[in-house]
Image (cartoon, rainbow, N blue to C red; front, top):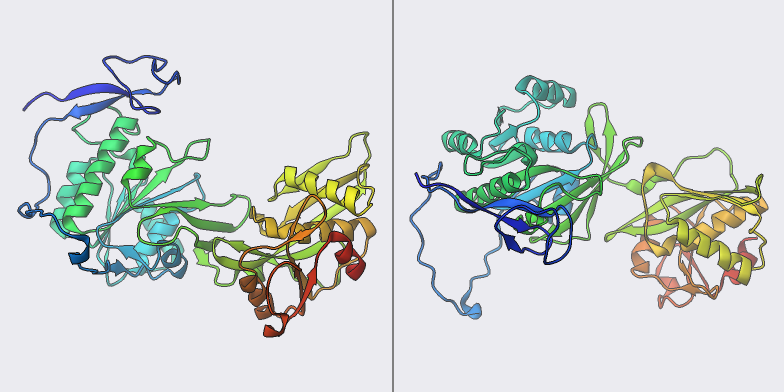
Amino acid sequence: MSKTKTSFFCQNCGTQTSQWMGQCKACGEWNTIVEEVIDKAEEKKPWKTDKEKTITIQNIKDVSEIGETRINALNDELNRVLGGGIVNGSVVLVGGEPGVGKSTLMLQVALHLTQTKVLYVSGEESASQIKLRAERIGIQSDQCFILTETNTQKIFKHAQEIEPQLIIVDSVQTLHTKYVEASPGSISQIRECTSELIRYAKETNVPVVLIGHITKEGVIAGPKILEHMVDVVLQFEGDRNHIYRILRANKNRFGSTAEIGIYEMQGSGLREVKNPSEILISKKDESLSGNAIAATLEGIRPMLIEIQALVSSAVYGTPQRSATGFDAKRLNMLLAVLEKRAGFQLGSKDVFLNITGGIRVDDPAIDLAVICAILSSNMDVSLPDNCCFAGEVGLSGEIRAVNRVEQRILEAEKLGYDVIFVSKYNKIKTSDYQIRVETVAKVGDLIKILF
């Protein structure tokens, strides 16, 4: 057997060097030089493949438009994010913080697929630990097979024996291959193991789901090329102190990256949230000041969220500005607009802003609801319970138009709201909706109507 040849590459610019160095001479970055395999020992592949197909040149007009076949994950939120299901032969990478629920989500999918043979490979937990989690989830399946193994060649050998229709690997950072002389979790091992799994998926047409850890910077651990190699990259987000989780696609070769899935973490596993608007809006017995409802979009999915604001006199010399789930710099900008354009003296007051449910929203269309919540708390006057807002606030105090306002209006109408405030510059027919659509051009106009 020939000797494995390795070389050193910069993960930032790709420069090849003969030895390890602390700093790359080409791009000047530190600690980016890693060892990688350039000529691995030849060995028979651990799975059977068909004879090599003869590849010919085709005119694009002659290529058949055969749609890809998908496996229904029996999970509406996951199917929505993937674009309709798991494509056969695809490789899906699911990343997220420790404890957010990645393993629970994929084990639920494996147990729900009672008509699909699933091989669940775990390099982090024993079979008994996985069994305990399955009992907590409360789903029984005789098509889910557990394999506690980290060597890729042994995984392929077992896969050849049982011939699964779906493979789930938890996690890719624990795998190792004998082709690379490096410890599991190193960049060389992650890259080579992923490359072997991708080749297996493409040659056998069996989809592979990889669970990946993320670094403290929030990116998936391993080389950046890992995300370029796979077909789908999913990010599982959520605060461990809150019960809601958001699944979004950062990359999807078979569907849109604008869809999101929302889950609620419970003792029995993750529950799909079909209508997030009803959960993210709290039920109150009486009207309270400082609360406003905003019609936002997460991807292309409309939902209503509740924004809470508290304005009080500053105890210390410098007033505090605190925002949870909202950009603090944008909050300062909106406060400046209220002071300059609407005449409210907020410079000497503490302002606290919170988006309920523990989610973070970057949609500028919630600006209108933010300023209404702030003014409501400042004046200690509650807003009507049946109104919501969708509009962006400009620096000159104008209410700017937002995209997909029709979807926002229909979502508010579906949830039983009576009136929605939008920008005057949104070109819509207000008579087309059962909900009353109020159009405003400036912040001052809105204040006159509400207060």
